Length: 631
Image (cartoon, rainbow, N blue to C red; front, side, top):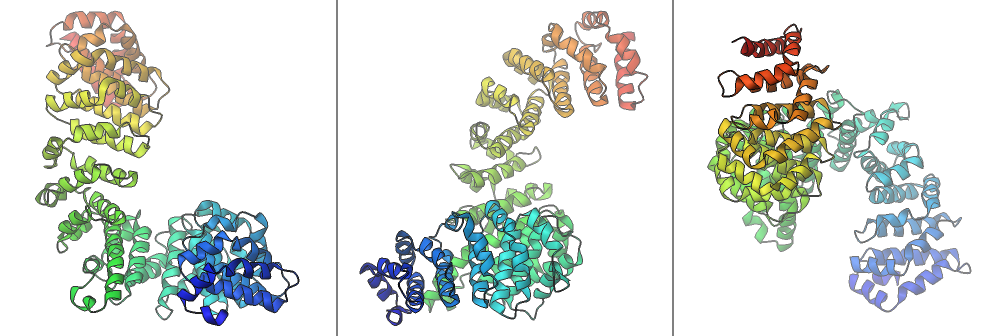
């Protein structure tokens, strides 16, 4: 059987159909079977697992994993190795749920104990761990079972395969995990610290796979804060190594992995973004990522074409991700990216690609570039980027919606020429619906974009926003548990209530509800910024011609303004004083009655006190208000 199935998928499938698997598993588990027989059974099962995904499914359906794990308790090393090899093959398959490794708590500690048995047990067990470590829960289990201590010394093994699998283990254990990363920094192996060992594995004379994986380890440790971003092992070793991986003479897979890892390394650090952007002409080098598959050579070889097409998606995705990281903060880098050949066309095409990953990466790239005032006014306008963006926002999955709506926020800033056409294409309705999302980031972006849209807008747009949102939804947002949502909603209100005719118009239709909302917030438990923003809204209302009366006839609100004038925080005092200033302005009708009412409340006495304030802004504001009484 063993010889019949090696390298022959048809024979493997035939044997499975004929019911060989349950029989092999029976013999494997029989105490009466000789060790040689049990070992041969494990080898044949391992060979069957090397076939198609359907083969692996059939093996899993026959409960092969518990049988093999049981086999690991045998005293015979050859049999253990055969079971581990088969387990490794099964766990590598995408159809095997990783959690099957963690169902029995004793399995991990037994595997840790087997690590010292032989070169093969080391290789297979590390491979099993690195494939089955998905996310923080698995990382924690392995970490708590001593994975770091047990695997570290394998990095200096005489076997390349063992060194490599140990390295891969660390790259998944440390990914987005500060606890593991902080531990790794201080681990000694043969008198050398782990980061130094990783740096040695980065050197150009090492195999590419090793260079890439050690760069990943150092990247994760850096992102987790275990290694500083200005450490020479990052700036002079890891970053240049990853840039090298992006060059034309690397395999497609290596270029993808290099670019994605580099994007992650520099994502949040301006200095690293600058260094990467001037290393080896990286920005131009990435433009090559869009030139696959190359038409002529590939057509002669269908298999190659298939491979190139698959990786062409991945290459584009990786390039967009890296461009997004490079352009995250620096205006000059953004300019260079946009000036790269056909860049805007490529992004626009990327937004409507069939692959969701490419769409997401393209919109990330667009978002990064949309932080540039200059580009919003020029390139974004020339390429009508808003069209594919609005199309992308129609029923996209949440992760795309979040980035696309962030980009839309930037395109709606008052100086952006895209603002008008976006409004005309039904953006208000779309954004109002985002504010009702369960997803916090989408609620924030929806309200943020509306806030930008309302800034210095015409009255019609403001009315449309209020209609689209509905008072009920506005209250929902003002009582949202997230302070970002609350601040952006107050920002929206403040933008809606600007310029006198607009203030009067909006307060004549929504005054009662808005005053109610303001009262609620000033009474609630909120931070200084929220209260300040709310008082600024009141100051805007106080600037209206007819809207003033809504404050003057509301004694509760007047008492609150008085209270905040004497608050311990200067920002709140300033905002409250601005309200008073706007209410008593001389040149306006009815100012005398308003001044008298506020004097009776003791406001003038407070203004006198504030005019002695050590805060110059507050002092000036109070003096300006007092002059209205004297005029």
